[in-house]
Image (cartoon, rainbow, N blue to C red):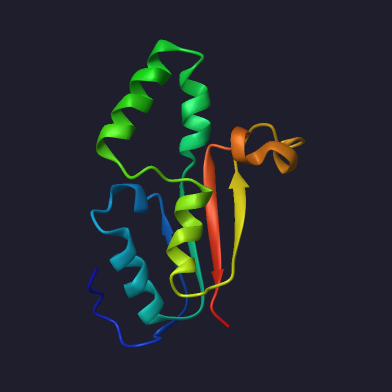
Length: 121
């Protein structure tokens, strides 16, 4: 939440699978904004996919229940809200090593990860 870098020190900053664990993701995003000039990229688990996956097996159900209790629920809505407070235009992308042919149509439901790309300029 308090990076030891100067204002706009980096062209691009990114976070990979961190935001689901943060106590205050908004404050962390604000700090990323402070040190970044052009673009912020955040990837996180897609809880929508995890919820759907939990319907198909006991082990997945346990994982989902654990995550709901101990992590921020991350999905496209979560990532959009981070940028909306600042009026930042962003793009959502869905990532997965499976279902690549139909992920473009049903990515929200089939992709294990969601990525927000925030273009600052």
